[in-house]
Length: 251
Image (cartoon, rainbow, N blue to C red; front, side, top):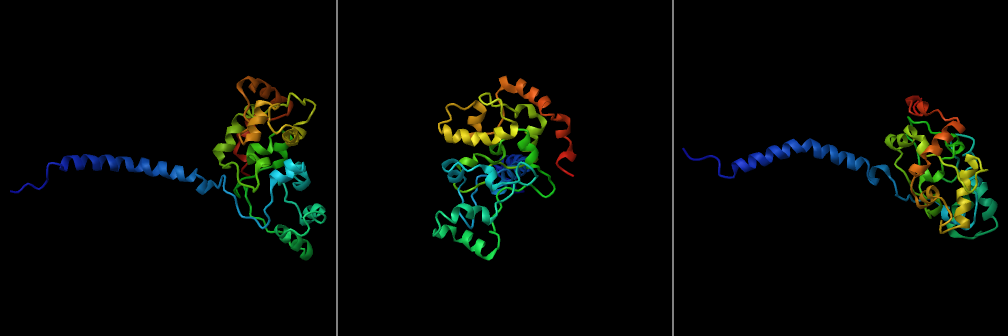
Protein backbone atom coordinates (compact mmCIF):
# COMPACT_ATOMS: atom_id res chain seq x y z
CA UNK A 1 0.00 0.00 0.00
CA UNK A 2 1.35 3.43 -0.98
CA UNK A 3 2.27 5.86 1.79
CA UNK A 4 -0.50 8.41 2.26
CA UNK A 5 1.41 11.03 4.30
CA UNK A 6 4.79 12.49 3.54
CA UNK A 7 7.62 13.15 6.03
CA UNK A 8 6.35 16.67 6.73
CA UNK A 9 2.86 15.53 7.75
CA UNK A 10 3.68 15.37 11.47
CA UNK A 11 5.10 18.90 11.41
CA UNK A 12 2.04 20.22 9.58
CA UNK A 13 -0.25 18.50 12.09
CA UNK A 14 1.61 19.97 15.09
CA UNK A 15 1.63 23.46 13.62
CA UNK A 16 -2.09 23.18 12.83
CA UNK A 17 -2.89 22.18 16.41
CA UNK A 18 -0.85 25.10 17.79
CA UNK A 19 -2.54 27.57 15.43
CA UNK A 20 -5.99 26.21 16.26
CA UNK A 21 -5.30 26.45 20.01
CA UNK A 22 -3.99 30.01 19.70
CA UNK A 23 -6.87 31.21 17.50
CA UNK A 24 -9.19 32.20 20.41
CA UNK A 25 -6.34 34.14 22.02
CA UNK A 26 -5.60 35.96 18.77
CA UNK A 27 -9.28 36.76 18.21
CA UNK A 28 -9.74 38.08 21.76
CA UNK A 29 -6.53 40.13 21.66
CA UNK A 30 -7.38 41.57 18.23
CA UNK A 31 -10.89 42.47 19.34
CA UNK A 32 -9.55 44.17 22.45
CA UNK A 33 -6.93 46.08 20.46
CA UNK A 34 -9.53 47.30 17.95
CA UNK A 35 -12.00 48.32 20.67
CA UNK A 36 -9.32 50.39 22.42
CA UNK A 37 -7.89 51.91 19.27
CA UNK A 38 -8.78 55.42 18.01
CA UNK A 39 -10.80 53.69 15.26
CA UNK A 40 -13.36 52.83 17.94
CA UNK A 41 -12.75 55.34 20.76
CA UNK A 42 -12.24 58.31 18.36
CA UNK A 43 -9.53 59.66 20.70
CA UNK A 44 -7.31 62.16 18.91
CA UNK A 45 -9.52 62.33 15.83
CA UNK A 46 -10.50 65.84 14.78
CA UNK A 47 -13.99 66.23 13.37
CA UNK A 48 -14.87 68.70 10.66
CA UNK A 49 -17.00 71.51 12.08
CA UNK A 50 -19.17 74.14 10.38
CA UNK A 51 -16.83 76.74 11.95
CA UNK A 52 -13.15 75.94 12.70
CA UNK A 53 -13.26 77.05 16.33
CA UNK A 54 -9.88 77.15 18.09
CA UNK A 55 -9.75 76.67 21.85
CA UNK A 56 -6.04 77.55 21.74
CA UNK A 57 -6.73 80.97 20.23
CA UNK A 58 -9.70 81.86 22.41
CA UNK A 59 -8.47 80.57 25.79
CA UNK A 60 -4.73 81.30 25.61
CA UNK A 61 -4.22 84.03 23.00
CA UNK A 62 -7.33 86.00 23.96
CA UNK A 63 -7.68 84.85 27.57
CA UNK A 64 -11.42 84.14 27.39
CA UNK A 65 -12.66 82.19 30.42
CA UNK A 66 -14.10 78.74 29.63
CA UNK A 67 -17.29 79.71 31.46
CA UNK A 68 -18.00 82.53 29.04
CA UNK A 69 -19.01 79.92 26.45
CA UNK A 70 -19.71 76.88 28.64
CA UNK A 71 -22.05 78.81 30.90
CA UNK A 72 -23.62 75.89 32.78
CA UNK A 73 -20.52 73.80 33.48
CA UNK A 74 -20.42 74.87 37.16
CA UNK A 75 -24.12 74.46 37.82
CA UNK A 76 -25.50 71.54 35.85
CA UNK A 77 -24.63 68.12 34.46
CA UNK A 78 -24.25 69.56 30.95
CA UNK A 79 -21.40 71.98 30.21
CA UNK A 80 -23.42 73.84 27.61
CA UNK A 81 -22.64 74.93 24.04
CA UNK A 82 -22.63 78.69 23.41
CA UNK A 83 -25.51 80.27 21.55
CA UNK A 84 -24.78 82.19 18.38
CA UNK A 85 -25.41 85.43 20.26
CA UNK A 86 -22.42 84.62 22.48
CA UNK A 87 -20.16 84.35 19.44
CA UNK A 88 -21.58 87.54 17.97
CA UNK A 89 -20.82 89.64 21.05
CA UNK A 90 -17.27 89.71 19.68
CA UNK A 91 -17.70 88.82 16.03
CA UNK A 92 -20.17 91.58 15.34
CA UNK A 93 -17.13 93.83 15.79
CA UNK A 94 -14.11 91.73 14.78
CA UNK A 95 -13.57 89.48 11.74
CA UNK A 96 -16.96 90.70 10.52
CA UNK A 97 -16.29 89.73 6.90
CA UNK A 98 -14.38 86.50 7.44
CA UNK A 99 -15.67 83.69 5.17
CA UNK A 100 -14.93 81.21 7.97
CA UNK A 101 -17.54 82.91 10.16
CA UNK A 102 -20.30 82.96 7.57
CA UNK A 103 -22.19 80.09 9.35
CA UNK A 104 -22.19 82.20 12.53
CA UNK A 105 -23.56 85.26 10.76
CA UNK A 106 -26.15 83.13 8.95
CA UNK A 107 -27.25 81.53 12.23
CA UNK A 108 -27.65 84.95 13.81
CA UNK A 109 -29.67 86.21 10.84
CA UNK A 110 -32.05 83.25 10.48
CA UNK A 111 -32.25 82.19 14.14
CA UNK A 112 -31.23 78.59 13.45
CA UNK A 113 -28.57 77.16 15.82
CA UNK A 114 -25.26 76.05 14.37
CA UNK A 115 -25.17 72.27 14.03
CA UNK A 116 -21.86 71.29 15.63
CA UNK A 117 -20.50 67.77 15.29
CA UNK A 118 -20.40 66.34 18.81
CA UNK A 119 -16.88 65.41 19.92
CA UNK A 120 -17.37 64.27 23.53
CA UNK A 121 -20.39 62.27 24.59
CA UNK A 122 -20.98 59.74 27.36
CA UNK A 123 -23.04 56.65 26.42
CA UNK A 124 -26.81 56.96 26.87
CA UNK A 125 -26.74 54.55 29.82
CA UNK A 126 -24.22 56.69 31.75
CA UNK A 127 -25.00 59.79 33.79
CA UNK A 128 -22.13 62.27 34.01
CA UNK A 129 -22.35 65.51 35.97
CA UNK A 130 -19.89 68.24 35.04
CA UNK A 131 -20.73 70.46 38.00
CA UNK A 132 -19.85 67.93 40.73
CA UNK A 133 -16.46 67.21 39.15
CA UNK A 134 -15.68 70.92 38.83
CA UNK A 135 -16.76 71.46 42.45
CA UNK A 136 -14.21 68.86 43.57
CA UNK A 137 -11.36 70.41 41.61
CA UNK A 138 -11.18 67.92 38.74
CA UNK A 139 -9.66 69.84 35.83
CA UNK A 140 -11.31 69.98 32.41
CA UNK A 141 -8.00 68.72 30.98
CA UNK A 142 -8.19 65.57 33.07
CA UNK A 143 -11.12 64.35 30.97
CA UNK A 144 -10.71 66.32 27.74
CA UNK A 145 -6.94 66.40 27.27
CA UNK A 146 -4.91 69.56 26.66
CA UNK A 147 -7.89 71.62 25.49
CA UNK A 148 -5.91 74.88 25.65
CA UNK A 149 -3.66 73.54 22.86
CA UNK A 150 -6.40 72.40 20.49
CA UNK A 151 -6.80 74.36 17.27
CA UNK A 152 -9.66 72.02 16.33
CA UNK A 153 -11.33 70.17 19.19
CA UNK A 154 -10.61 66.47 19.45
CA UNK A 155 -11.57 63.78 21.94
CA UNK A 156 -8.89 63.51 24.62
CA UNK A 157 -9.90 60.40 26.58
CA UNK A 158 -11.66 57.11 25.71
CA UNK A 159 -14.40 57.47 28.37
CA UNK A 160 -14.46 53.74 29.03
CA UNK A 161 -15.73 52.48 32.38
CA UNK A 162 -12.26 51.16 33.17
CA UNK A 163 -10.83 54.65 32.65
CA UNK A 164 -13.48 56.29 34.85
CA UNK A 165 -12.92 53.75 37.63
CA UNK A 166 -9.22 54.57 37.89
CA UNK A 167 -10.34 57.78 39.56
CA UNK A 168 -13.51 56.55 41.25
CA UNK A 169 -11.67 53.69 42.95
CA UNK A 170 -8.80 55.89 44.16
CA UNK A 171 -10.01 59.51 44.21
CA UNK A 172 -7.30 60.52 46.70
CA UNK A 173 -4.77 60.03 43.89
CA UNK A 174 -6.52 62.63 41.73
CA UNK A 175 -7.14 65.40 44.25
CA UNK A 176 -4.64 68.18 44.77
CA UNK A 177 -4.53 71.73 46.05
CA UNK A 178 -2.55 74.46 44.31
CA UNK A 179 0.11 75.30 46.90
CA UNK A 180 0.80 78.60 45.15
CA UNK A 181 -2.86 79.65 45.54
CA UNK A 182 -4.23 77.81 48.61
CA UNK A 183 -7.00 80.39 49.01
CA UNK A 184 -8.71 79.26 45.80
CA UNK A 185 -11.73 76.99 46.01
CA UNK A 186 -11.54 73.71 44.04
CA UNK A 187 -13.85 75.30 41.45
CA UNK A 188 -11.67 78.40 41.10
CA UNK A 189 -8.53 76.27 40.92
CA UNK A 190 -9.87 74.44 37.85
CA UNK A 191 -10.15 77.62 35.80
CA UNK A 192 -7.11 79.34 37.26
CA UNK A 193 -4.96 76.73 35.50
CA UNK A 194 -5.60 78.50 32.17
CA UNK A 195 -4.66 81.84 33.69
CA UNK A 196 -1.35 80.24 34.68
CA UNK A 197 -0.84 79.01 31.12
CA UNK A 198 -1.13 82.58 29.87
CA UNK A 199 1.22 83.91 32.54
CA UNK A 200 3.78 81.10 32.23
CA UNK A 201 3.69 79.37 28.81
CA UNK A 202 6.87 77.45 29.69
CA UNK A 203 5.08 75.89 32.71
CA UNK A 204 8.34 76.30 34.68
CA UNK A 205 6.54 77.74 37.70
CA UNK A 206 3.75 75.16 37.70
CA UNK A 207 3.46 72.15 39.97
CA UNK A 208 4.06 68.62 38.71
CA UNK A 209 0.32 67.95 38.51
CA UNK A 210 -0.34 71.16 36.58
CA UNK A 211 2.43 70.46 34.09
CA UNK A 212 0.94 67.03 33.43
CA UNK A 213 -2.49 68.53 32.83
CA UNK A 214 -1.19 71.25 30.54
CA UNK A 215 0.76 68.73 28.47
CA UNK A 216 -2.27 66.48 28.08
CA UNK A 217 -1.65 64.01 30.90
CA UNK A 218 -4.02 63.11 33.71
CA UNK A 219 -4.43 64.67 37.13
CA UNK A 220 -2.90 61.79 39.11
CA UNK A 221 -0.67 63.16 41.87
CA UNK A 222 2.86 62.06 42.84
CA UNK A 223 3.11 59.49 45.62
CA UNK A 224 4.30 62.05 48.14
CA UNK A 225 1.04 64.01 47.68
CA UNK A 226 -1.39 61.10 48.04
CA UNK A 227 -1.59 61.72 51.79
CA UNK A 228 -2.73 65.27 51.01
CA UNK A 229 -5.34 63.78 48.69
CA UNK A 230 -6.73 61.68 51.53
CA UNK A 231 -7.15 64.85 53.60
CA UNK A 232 -8.95 66.52 50.72
CA UNK A 233 -11.38 63.58 50.55
CA UNK A 234 -12.53 64.53 54.05
CA UNK A 235 -12.40 68.27 53.40
CA UNK A 236 -14.51 68.03 50.22
CA UNK A 237 -16.95 65.54 51.75
CA UNK A 238 -16.28 62.85 49.13
CA UNK A 239 -17.70 59.43 50.01
CA UNK A 240 -15.24 57.07 48.39
CA UNK A 241 -17.37 53.93 48.79
CA UNK A 242 -20.27 55.62 47.01
CA UNK A 243 -18.11 56.47 43.99
CA UNK A 244 -17.68 52.77 43.18
CA UNK A 245 -21.44 52.09 43.46
CA UNK A 246 -22.95 51.25 40.07
CA UNK A 247 -25.94 53.50 40.79
CA UNK A 248 -23.65 56.56 40.93
CA UNK A 249 -23.33 56.59 37.13
CA UNK A 250 -26.03 54.13 35.99
CA UNK A 251 -29.48 55.17 37.15
